[in-house]
Length: 200
Image (cartoon, rainbow, N blue to C red; front, side, top):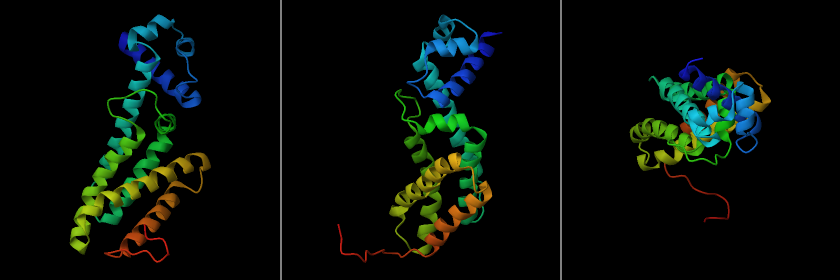
């Protein structure tokens, strides 16, 4: 096996073990044993468990961000919302181990941050779309970041639930997410008000 092939093998093994057991529950010994190598080989390629974990997380975050931003190809804003929701659920379905790793709290600082910062990166993409729509509809475009975080957070949390529930089907989940968010967005009040007794 070449050095590059060995590195990829260790990344694959690490991804599976981190998804199953978490960072704390996975040891260098397990990684080496599962890969059929000695512990020094793991240290040689990654400097230890922390280095391997950081590379696994960085790759998964890039893959998810690329899938979501690549899906936003234009069209009607409602279609963009559908595309983003499908992309996240596609990632969860195709890269389940990676998603399980991303949603755990990470003990290692990665170059791209945490799952929360990744969601924030995706929300920034959505924010640009919402800002344009808000301006056209006479809403305050400065509020687009708030709405973008709410929308992306809703889809991400629903995706976590769907990973375990595995039903209804992906298209039905997307249709309900878009129904709630789009119909909620289409009925937005320019200056929303509270009707309960609590005002702050």
